[in-house]
Length: 266
Image (cartoon, rainbow, N blue to C red):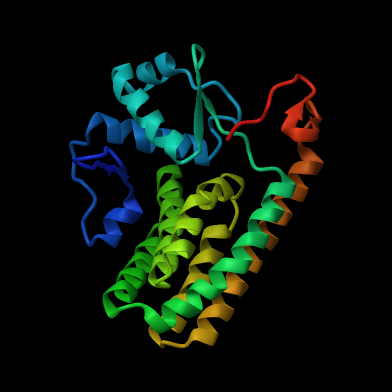
């Protein structure tokens, strides 16, 4: 089923995870054409069927999905807002590059500074309704942990929403805005397709939710920290494997430029 509805006023995508958080059901068939294009493109980007940095051929996708180009362009605009794609004037859309090892390292350093504290605050300050939404979302993610590529994309969106909800439940607007602005989760899950990351994440989320429901700030902080450290360790394994197996390409130079002189975009 489709991952998004279009918001009435600002055309913001309401993902699978946000629909769950709002206690709504995902839309039933027939999907809108934008929904169809969005979920297919999201799946292709998260599973890297569309390679990082690759040109996204709108005409070819329109033929593949048997729809017009307009909903594909709208879906790409939504994905650009999530920093999974970017548009070059007079050229078209490209898939975002993968994060570098240093960027992954820096990202987890920041998350470890913010998210354990956010979980502790949430255990103290969140209302019961927010905690129940978190528990419901974690349950839906458990159901989506195995499945096809679309299910994997749904899980990735659910993971992002769970962390955003914990941050929002902290009661600190600046923490919530920082976590949401990182756009970290969908980028991280691009590395983890065909690993056991979803199964491990479900188990780690259960520990976080248990501590939150118990209103135990120390346990919530500890569970979030352990989850982030485990996620970082999974990323390190994948990055090391990529370094061993990926063919040598244009090496990045200072300032994020490759030897071909193009600045990496994401």
